[in-house]
Length: 77
Image (cartoon, rainbow, N blue to C red):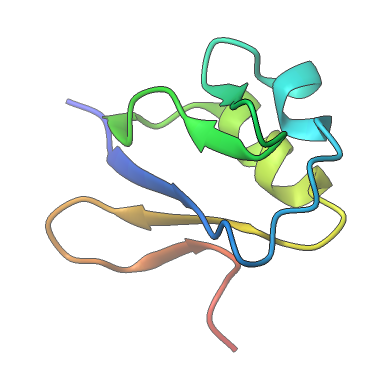
């Protein structure tokens, strides 16, 4: 069984670049205000989701492990 991730977009930080929707369209969508949302906040670990989080120009996307809350992205210092 693989890791499960919780994906969250901080709407106070999101600038609506849509980078995440281009990199992982199955995981993210833009709302009418042009802000990103995770389509399913919890799901199986997915490299495309990680790529989208890493590609966000303002680091509005956080990924944590379901259960432990351990940071996947951005990594803890």
